[in-house]
Length: 352
Image: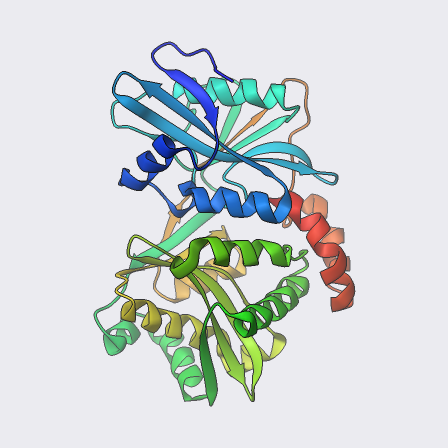
């Protein structure tokens, strides 16, 4: 359905739209979350409809914003660009204006009965009424990989380097792949990890779809101790950058330094694949993961997130670390793992 715009025509398209996909593939600032495979995987795993808003003028595509329409019985409905992503948002040609996109997203949200729109990166609606922008809630951590393993160790601050060396001395088995053994191990470890943190686990189908659709651009690295998986991470590879995205460890991982070994092994693996950059991902400001990544010598880069709330609607709060959800988090940590794994995905699909 077309939208009104002053200098270009906007339309809603399928994520695999040829013109939009070509624009993303050619754009130097395109992120992993702009790729059609991302929103398609979210749609297939959760049912959250995937579409892309495309702006075109006489020169061709002027900009795109891939998004998912999130529907949750717990957290309500919203448009997320992009669902389950930490980036994405409006991707523009250098001479294009972002304002038509913001207006179109507001109109689309009202049509779809979504009182909330979230943009996770890209062009921001700096002065547009109804939108709020946060730059203090999350930070990203990324830096170039060192030339070799010894240089990588020396690039890590001394205290953390000592912890990594302890992990390197452990008799671990390192497995990398995307087969059934790796997938089962990853889900078991990840589900345990997030339960221990007090948050519901995402559905297994989300990880399955991501691995299937990204192919060689995604894999799992698992650290095993006495053949038991103790740490595991699902990572993506995008334009020479490795992105450890969904990772965690069991209680045993801490004393074994399995998480330290996991991320150092991932650096080694990424270098062997020809990657030159390590994107440790985002963390909530002031959190434990925030401190953990700083300890590795990564500097925080504040992220800009924009949200729009429909007139008269209550502001959406799906932040699992917010004060509002504190009691639920404490109770969730006490749930038996089989129970958490059974009901968690039903809740977690709304945390997109």
